[in-house]
Amino acid sequence: MPARKPTRGSTDLPSTLERSSKKAQETWLATHDAAVEQYGEGERAHRTAFASLKHSFHKVGDHWEEKAEKGPSDRQAERRGAEARAHRDDGDSAGGVDANASKQHLYDIAKRLQVSGRSTMSKAELVEAIQRANDRATAAARDST
Image 1 (cartoon, rainbow, N blue to C red):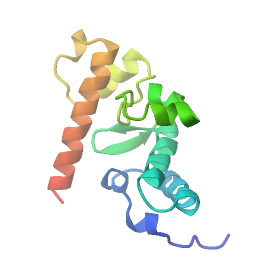
Image 2: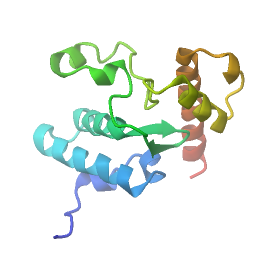
Image 3: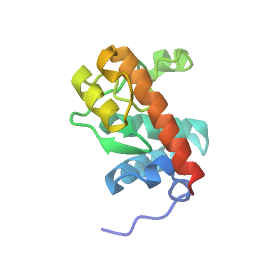
């Protein structure tokens, strides 16, 4: 198999993906490169790459981990085409958290991230708390580099 030709996406890998598995990086890069060919470089190519990544991976702290089961991670990811574009800014995205995962799985992730008060949280509250913990971990990782 010929070596993969480097593209713009390979030099602009998001920092959270730099700390993730090779499979996560390759998923993002392959989709990003295809999206750049179709849409051009920019926000749309990045959104497309992250949408593809979130189908198989979820964000835990400052990196992406493979999900137990592939599939949409939140309400926004379940939408397609014009409906997805119409609701893009509705706040339905869980920012990489697999909001469709079981409450027990979310609780386990919250425990790993040392989220306080997790035992009394609803599923929606766990998703929000994990999002905040992920944002803090990502910011801390960026500050340390």
